[in-house]
Length: 246
Image (cartoon, rainbow, N blue to C red; front, side, top):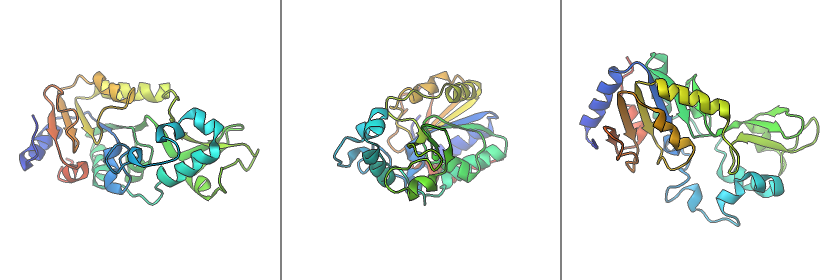
């Protein structure tokens, strides 16, 4: 069922009202309304021109061999410290506080779900807010990375500091995957938002959902082929802002 009329939002409200264990699975489109570009949109990160392909720069091997170039790109195109939670983040936190939403599973690394007040967040690809020394493991916040002169070095041992994000060539964290799978498997409703479902293995986690209600909120309608899914082709913040958390 694909609909872009107010009736689709009313139907989404009905499904949410009928559910008690909702999980949200989200991607880059959730944060575009906060001013963070979608990696794969026309104006997104992956359609910009750089000396190296973004996929190469954001790889583990490139980080280790060319940390200066990595951080030059990373600060310029990945970090958005001024970004604030938008209506989607805030509504999801509200639904969790109301006892309806049990978990957020996100492919984003911006920390905006927690900034909005969400408590149970499974960050499949890590977070730019956490950083650590590659040698001694000392933790550093985002501001330390921003303020560093070129390449951030540990103030304790002098070694390279790395962001706690999953780079290309990195495996996903087994514990995070297990938590996300358990949440999705137990859900009676899954809301998929702001993702094209093309990034694997993260996108494959939705296959663990066997609950009663499935909704997809995405501008390009990705997921429209899912059986019995309510598909809404609208900005996710605009849609969720109309939902009431009871």
